[in-house]
Amino acid sequence: MKQDYDVIIIGGGLLGCATAYQLAKRKAGKVLLLDANEIASQASSRAACLLTRARTKPALMEMVQETYDCIDEIEHLLGESLELQQCGSVTISSSDASLKELEALEEAAVRFGIPNERIDRRRLKELLPWMEVSAVEEALYMPTDAFIDCALLCSGYARAARSLGAELRSNTKVKAIVAVGDKATEVELADGEKVLAPVVVNAAGSWANLLMRPLGVGLPFTPVRSHFWITGTNLGRFPANHPFTVIPDARAFTRSDVGALIIGLRESECQAFNPDTLTDKLEDFDFNKAAEWKVLDECAPLLQRYLPDIETLGIAHYMAGPSCYVPDAKFIIGQVRPYDGLYAVAGCCGGGVAAGGGMGRLAAELILREEPFVDPAGFAPDRFGAVDPFSVEFQKRCADARSNKKGG
Ligand SMILES: Cc1cc2nc3c(=O)[nH]c(=O)nc-3n(C[C@H](O)[C@H](O)[C@H](O)COP(=O)(O)OP(=O)(O)OC[C@H]3O[C@@H](n4cnc5c(N)ncnc54)[C@H](O)[C@@H]3O)c2cc1C
Image (cartoon, rainbow, N blue to C red; front, side, top):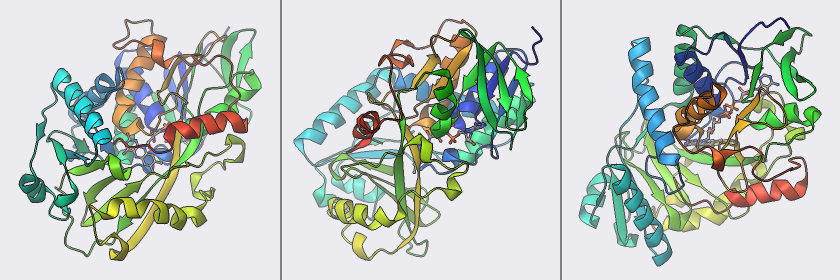
């Protein structure tokens, strides 16, 4: 059969672009990436952009480290800065439960060689003058944690992939993945054009299951709402060099940026979205903005003990977007059985900025049958057996994995 490309990637967000970069770097042949919108324009332009290094889940620290390595490589390759901001992070504990989590994180950081130190209230106040430190029992400072503009990182992966020979087409929607028997053979575009390749990678983010349904398989995730609030920039209290914070007892994180404070709050019952209801562009999607104040009512009081004037700070912006959650809160990377040649890189679980480089690397290694740098078993798309991501019950399982999230 005629073959137009060696690999077709559907989706030009962080996961698709990182996969394209990792494949192009490994000289995987002719790689084509297709996106229905502009590259980096969907979930990957809405993140809080935290690159938290220390993690307690298996393989995650290796994946995040791979992202940091990619940033260095891409800056070198493109000869430009991706503007990584190494501001550090502080994880805060005010209870026995969160102290256990802090200790586990500290142990993981030590094991992986991530610089970390416990700091006292005086040092905490120096680092974060806005914080009411009397509410804090323990604080763990990790000076090498950073954040990065997620759209700039995504376009960095894309441009690096292109400079290594990959072809990128934006505003090109895939209508269907075509399989003959149990082999994925081509994709059909919205204008009817057919493009052939022996490997097709579904990295279509929140929309990925819409492409899987006609093939009779479901990827085990659902889009759930993630969001944060941004104060005005005129307060003079939040310079960009402050460490970001993770405050599990308040189910919150904060990050200073251009004079404002970004405040992430996680509600106890997270909202899931049926993929059928998604619009082609997130700009047209209603994330239930009306519920914004309900979430603030529930969550802001938890943060108030650390940020006493939260009620009067003045919120200038609200940002909502989809994160794709899996019941075990682990990514989906690998071959989609029973289809030979069909792969998925999906289910970011709110970590695609931090772990995208590693997710793309694992996908590329599996596609090229190289030795994987982390154990892929925990990320297998079929690890839950057959699932129906369009069912309310399954969406609830996924949303439960996000509800009450405490980490960074
Ligand atoms: C509010 C918020 C805060 C977040 N904060 C963080 C954070 O601090 N740290 C972190 O690591 N992560 C964070 N995330 C998660 C991060 O944004 C995601 O993990 C990441 O953007 C996922 O990338 P993606 O490529 O899967 O999705 P997307 O960026 O949505 O890309 C999918 C692409 O597929 C395209 N597509 C869909 N269907 C088709 C089709 N049929 N044909 C062609 N193209 C198609 C879409 O146009 C889209 O561009 C946050 C997310 C949100 C919403």
